[in-house]
Image (cartoon, rainbow, N blue to C red; front, side):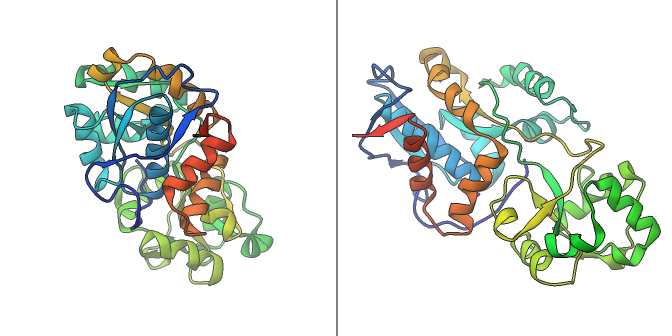
Length: 314
């Protein structure tokens, strides 16, 4: 999965904090179908995934379950193992992460639905049940400041390739170390679009710094970003269209420990409506509340669920 690494205080830092919110059903969880259940939710340790994990926990809580909060686990693998082994019951995972990182496929499936179906079917053998995905797609992208784009008028990555051929010195790019070396990162993108960016034009740095450099300095014209990052709008960036569909789809979907789902199949009815409302734009707004405004991910998740009518305050 595409990772937005941040350090967060507050929710989920302790392994297994009980979720104590006084919430009741709204449009989901009526009749409290999870009454008597004890369920554990988890997430990776970046803002968006923590918010999504909190949403699952709050929905379960409103539906009557006792919920243990084990969000904010370090890295993708620890959360993945918790779901497989039953140390946690539910989280939001990303289709591209599962297909490439966990299931070992080199080539992504371009169609988002077909990729989700392939992941769902193959992951069954690992004791993981995938519920329907959202349109929230947290994938790689390149961005440019609106100020600089007033000069270059870039809309697509093919436009970048054309600029790189016409004026190689103009295309400077800030990226993370990992993106600079991954086949589904910069080298693969250059190959797919027939561009060759000189090594002297590639600057490597931490993810958070990239946004600032692209927005506020001229050290790089373009920067690696993640499509659901709240800083895109806050820092006035234009995201360039991946017109050849090179980057994998990273659609978020609930994954459930299969033994848990077999016991509580009503989980699907609780989470499907939430997933249907989760879009890339919604994620940008929610992520900005944490990464730009400094709000607590748990409160961001709860406020959104209440505003959407999924749950209510008790």
